[in-house]
Length: 37
Length: 162
Image 1 (tube, rainbow over the protein chains, first blue to last red):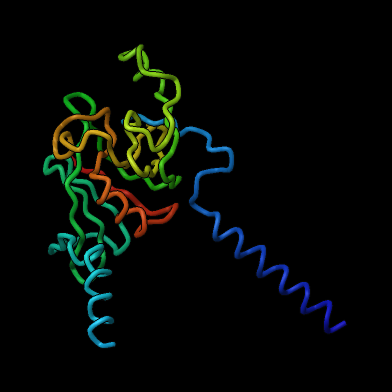
Image 2: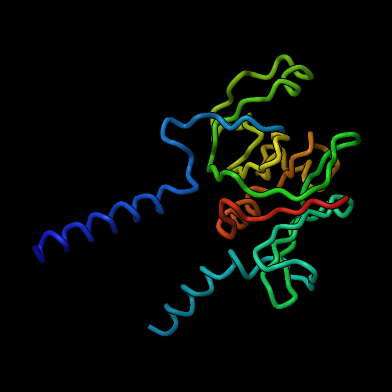
């Protein structure tokens, strides 16, 4: 029981970390930005 | 050991130390303020101070004012011209790869809310920075946009004044 709670917490932290790391970066596939210049 | 450490700090310092920090009041820390007439962009750091950068701004008839926010951050983005730019310059390719000399975004771009398809970006024409040159975007030296890129977040407020 204790192990599964720990595992769940680790998974949540890993997902948050992955989201934070990717946040603000160009999307995968590198869609062009369409802006004036 | 001490000499090596001091040399390392000296080499690492210029990225922030070389910036032009000026007195600046009236806006919350973390706000980007563009003063179009001055052709300057300020990043408010608090304590009555802001980092000041030179920018290219909208040419006659293309400048604007308002409050928006950063909606996206992109390093070396591929770039596509919007319809009005394409109409003015039909020979512009539909997509220009990021990191190429032809890409007007330079090394980074931060897109802005408001629906105007404006951005704060780097450049492939550094000689144009500081002029009234753009379609309403804010054009920075690549070194400066790299510095600003690391200071701002998606959601950072951007206030553009005449």
